[in-house]
Length: 285
Image (cartoon, rainbow, N blue to C red; front, side):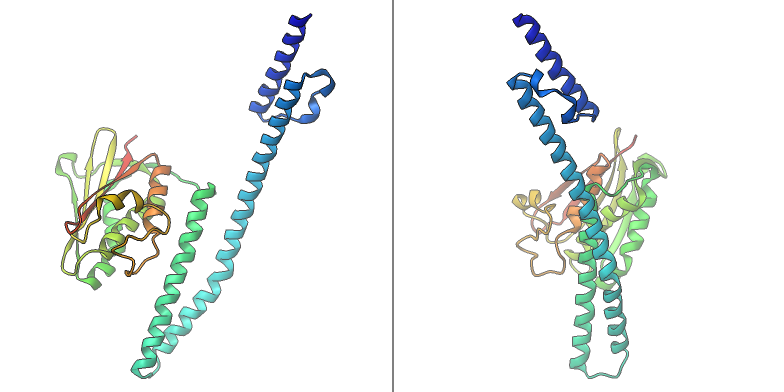
């Protein structure tokens, strides 16, 4: 009799688990009067797990809608502020007023950048963005990222040089999403320009390994202390030596999130006063 009861209880638990794994678990499908205390507890646990999963999904959808609303609601006011600032800057104003107009423009652009970065971060963290990885040319990626940064580099008197390793031939491919990966690498390059000295050189080196292709951003700037390297990819983290520099501390965080979602990784090699090397490894297959 006990054997029959134990077998019945085991079958009931197995059926609950099978239904839960298949996503069709419903509390009303089980007759509580026919279950032992253990079965009842197990049923409650699965019910709460399902409710928790549903709540997480609802919160994810709600957050996505909120982020979309913020994007739409702030886009027009910021665009208008920048437009009126530009119009003011074209007027015959005295030097003091012109400085204030320029500061309004700079802060507005910073706010716009921060809002867009937060939107991208939210999309990455909630899984509401999609990657379309396919085989693409790494040399082209390096050249396109270089073009995106040339204006800033020229304004600061920094030279950007690209180098695709000759042993890899004129070009080689890796698997990545063009749009998001370009943004990730540009964020690293922009960071290198931000913390490099005027008149220095930033190198974009591309080479291939057996399983991964690597695009490296190498600068001659201030470098990073060893204990800070694990922290620099944190959201809004600013190193103790660069807190007074321009930036909000989100570019490297976004870069790592993007690359890891492509099954790649980022390696950092640096010493204070001797520049930094950021190596982005992307899968070749």
